[in-house]
Length: 176
Image (tube, rainbow, N blue to C red):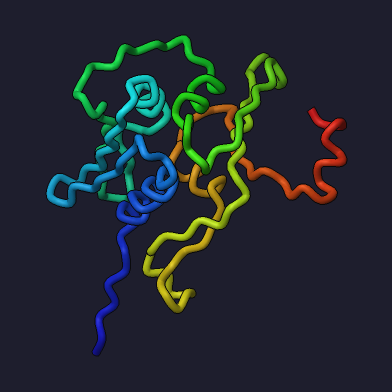
């Protein structure tokens, strides 16, 4: 009988992070299987600081946890600036990444908490995931779906895809 070797959820998470930053030449994502550790090497110090704040230090998948570390390429300690807004964090983390369009904040909408809309480019993203529903084992999705999975615990942050130029932008003056 044939044995299926499906990708573990933490491997799929690694592939999602890798897919999110595939257009960013300053970010290199490496999974260390022996240590069950996801390492994100970043060439720019500001980008490294922003990603350190956006990515969780650990991610749990049932009984398995992986560590996630953002490492500045020059091993320089990046100062912690806790006064960054979500808009500033995402702008710094995605500067130069073709997957990212923009981020917009709306201050004090609900009970004084600001809302940030992170907008990604309109592109189908594919990565290998042993998807049994796909002949090639590929998962096809949007950047907004990947962002929802990899950036967890960020209150008031919503992810979306830049709309089609036909029709959808005509209502832009209505919201927000």
